Image: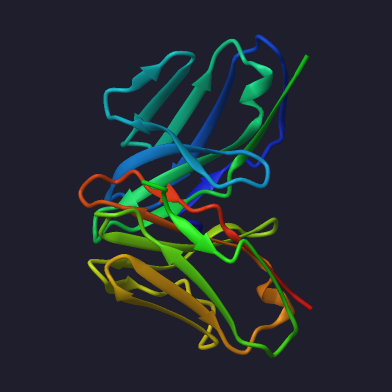
Length: 110
Length: 113
């Protein structure tokens, strides 16, 4: 079983739609969680950290469910510029190992 | 700061040749990760270092791959001999413990023919 699993998509949505991605992780000792964004032929960049209480940054909301070992990302009012691959990232407690999911492709269309 | 710097940006080499990829960390960062990205396998962690010490190299595909940190700000990933299946984009990323946001370099696109 992979350490971090995501639905690869693609998710094809119209502008203005709300879209949600889920991610599951296998190691219950995982300590920190993140969503990264990767544009085509570019490097991944941090979108937001995911906190136990849930957190929001503008149109983006991240949630963590430790009991079920999954993380979610909700994007409201999708923009064309949101089209990218969204990577779920987990930091394991021992030594700062950062493990990436394979990514979920989002395509927002006008 | 210029961010994480990788070189070369592109490398085309023949099967059997030695390839060396280079990475300069952000000044002050003390943790370094090497990843490989392909369409089929996504972003795979090859190896990571904390304070110049390799912590986990379980992702290194085989003995043909080796990585070093000769000092706190620089790392190399070497493939010898290279094979066509090594073709991928190789990223390095650095972070400052205990802050865990990782900053990536722009990657090296390796093609082995």
